[in-house]
Image (tube, rainbow, N blue to C red; front, top):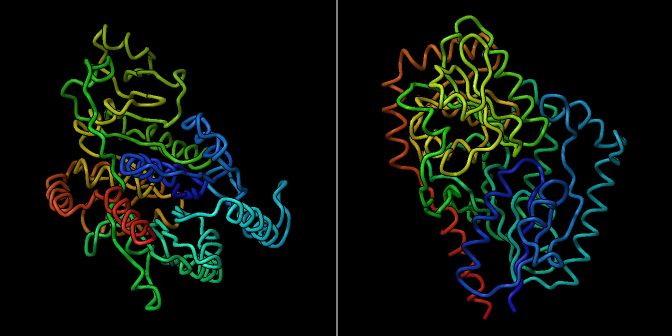
Length: 409
């Protein structure tokens, strides 16, 4: 049986969501044997998603940044390159160790094709064994801001690892509609390998059921959709910035829905302007004039409804999320970055008049005000962008994988 390896970088959820949508598509196309590789929360998600394929789910300790309070700690992560930090062995040791472990699995399984989303080391291992590798990404050599010049050697190393792939598949629209443009900067040596496959949007049609109390509570209200995403530190850092803005006097009448991306019903609540708290069902039944709705985890139907009815969305700059909002739902954004990757994408968005960049409390509040004042301009720009949006990343990548495997028969 044809064997496909899916190597999923464990930092954040974007890599996982892309690979699961691709996996579902490939399983519909032929009878393949899949093997999955990751660590931490993503490894646990794989075990939950594929209980009957546990023997094909492998935990590999891919190196990741060290968490700080509000996203990755740059200081700790840099120190960790040569020194142990918080139970993390030096990065050079981690890389050597994890490549040895992955290499043993490569030799044992014998892949026909590997698809790497964020795991650059797998490109190297595949090249050494003459195995075709597809690297799915929205980064190659990100633009560095002046305060980050010391990352240049690391970026050169990353780009060299990515270059080992047989094909580099950009999960974004073709230029000039590439929102991750400033995170790419491909060298001449790899340009022939690059294919813009499109965003990995959800191809499954959602079967609508009766509206939930949350959907009913929305009514025809004007509100912003504030999304918390990413791993714990990124999610917490995003949430802290949001809360600072919410307590600004100018935000007292600005209605918002906050999704926390955490499957915890204890988060669910509704606040009125006086700070009184209600459950979602209680607020709907009493007809509460709400100011804020917090929801731990929105169902796909609820998320679609919230996005369809919101005026704008607030995000931290996640590539997957921005594609969904700007491309699929055609809503302008306010971007509050956590990483340089986010900064580059939000700056690109602002230059195209698709949204507004903000970093601190005052800038966020001012961005909300600008969004209302100049909404028609942002809306028109986003509408044009959405017409040229390529959301066929799943199908296009699956087609490339099938063509490669057919050639091997």
